[in-house]
Length: 373
Image (cartoon, rainbow, N blue to C red; front, top):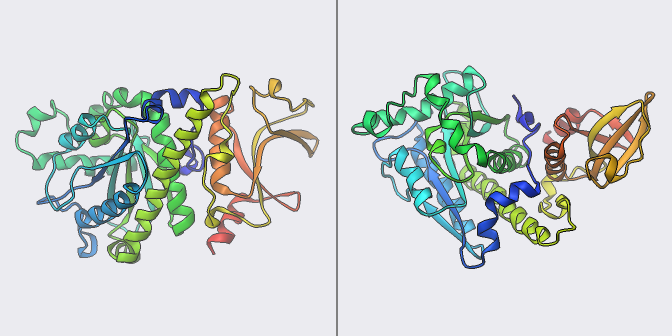
């Protein structure tokens, strides 16, 4: 499941989405609270691939993310830990819940017996593959380091898939928001740092399950990979990772603020997503136009909003005897991903991104690969 889970990471922006998280953005008194969680700590070093310590790297990245977020007006940052101490999984979620947080972000580093590499970002859900389950199981097994873990976690068994089933229900109402943030994080890291895209995924992490707000877990990369491990252990790698995670969170917060302003006008039916995402040079593909393909049909329809679930900016083109209907038009790959998930939320779940050069459709993976090179 490539970050094309939404299909390439992407982002849910609909009015219903914002009603869940509007409270912090609408209320000028209550700050927007972000809880940053550096995985592991203390006697729990996490993985030690190539001799690097996950707990130390995750903490360094988290502190750098927090330092940037603390510069934002009306944003409060809370850390589950700021030093090398052990924090129980249950307590990490409790810190966020007590703070009435609006966002929970947990940072980790991955490990594997092979030379696997790349970044993947998780939201809570039933594992959809054995690989996802193994990642979740590895992170959940930290509960064995806690005293009386059987009583504390109500018989939860990290090794049993059936233990995960009940976990999803509590987080269901926040899933769209979690996917939004996970997609922004994944998009930034993959596009701007040229990391291998291991996608946005769903898996059963205890630390996500017990939080009552949108929550994501980021596996920044593999310490067990010779090159990636060295990069994540370096000051450069940690600064760059923190920058992209921080920018994703900033964009998420910005999207809420813009959306809530729009909601106050009852005549506005959709968010102008091109005004939500900040444009960066890394996201711009010169000479390329991205669009979201909604449908292909032999029937010629007027591309007016009433024919396309209220969507504006729909265009129609004829190709190989079929009429194809597109939404949006931009050279910014980040923006088109937002637009794609927006239309999926509006009722076009199979919508996908296409690319054009000089008016002709071109292969999207080749376009993205060309910039990476």
